[in-house]
Length: 197
Picture (cartoon, one colour):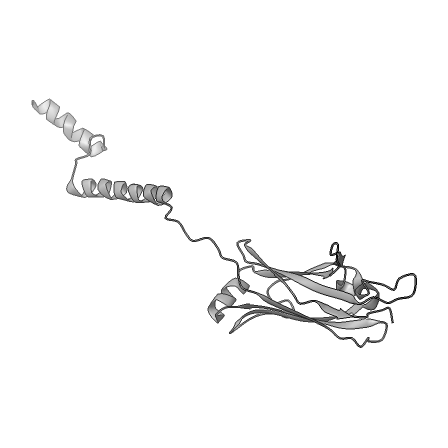
């Protein structure tokens, strides 16, 4: 090798065109290859995060059978998702919500009842800091009371012979976490003879 070729080779090394192979570079390439192999195996073997599981939920409905002035009835809802306090606050503070809807329990199909907002809205959603929606030491709770019109609660009105039929009402609640994974629960059926007042 003449001196001219030696100078060209040194210039290429300085410019980064012919990097020197060192033990550190070999180790880095092996590390990248191992990481790539592990990632490929993770995809093909199924090493992935566990899917989100449905949450255990409980729901209770109570409707006071004594009408308030104006034919309004006190409706009490209670939804509970048991979990530890850390998880409860994690869900609550990261977009989790509860949506509720009331239904008439009938033999052929269950029609939706617009009980919220004085009988004008069928569905209501609670987000963090909404009244009644809380994260506590034993889980997430929705405890909510409101007055509903008897004319809507009277889902089985008196027939043409004047017979008053018993009304059967329940609600469903959907808990949806911040990632959009939902769980559904149905309350007990509350019964009574509700009317217009």
